[in-house]
Each structure stands twice: as C-alpha cells, then as structure tokens.
Length: 107
Image (cartoon, rainbow, N blue to C red; front, side, top):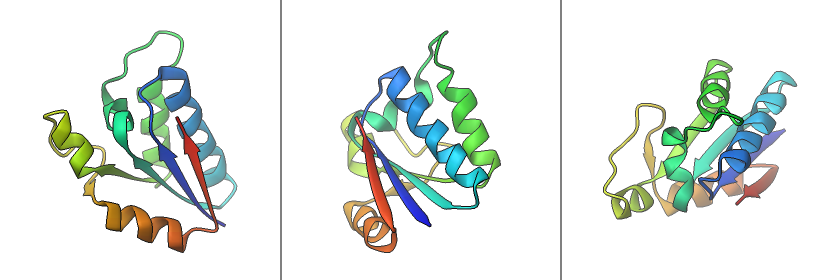
C-alpha cells in the first residue's frame, strides 16, 4: 500500500506518533511519504524528553521513508530547506495524495 502521512503539528507527541506509524508501515513493506505542512515543518527542531521526535525521524529515514516540507510554510517561518527533507509545493502534496492508497493527517 502507498501511504501518505500529512503532519500539520509541532506538538511532540503528535509528531512522534506520525513518524512511529510511518516506521511501522515501512517495516510491514508499505511505501510511506510524510509531508510536513504548517507547524509540521518545525518537527526537526522539536526537543522533548518524553517524545524523542529526532529518534523517530532518523529511524523513518533509515528505513527509506521519504519526507517533504512545504516551501511556503518554511518561508513563513524564515526557515530554509532542511537536511532531512526537500522543499515541496501544494502541487507536490496533491500529487502525493492522488498517488497514495490512503492519506492520513496528524495535527
């Protein structure tokens, strides 16, 4: 199955769970792409003792999960392209949703 996960939150537990689901799906031989939208583009900077988002992001990437970040959302926060994911557009997000069997949102 092709799974699209849209993360629209910088809440540590929400981001942690989005990546945990992505990891579980990858381990079960599904294709997974996570799109960071709105506050989701801030997930790379989340520091939380209880919810280790960085560990989940690294585990997701290690399993060849793909992450995309909304360029407009980054620009609104005066952020640039991240080392963990390329910049994407709404057109890219629409294409991701169209190509996926299921699309889930977190946030």
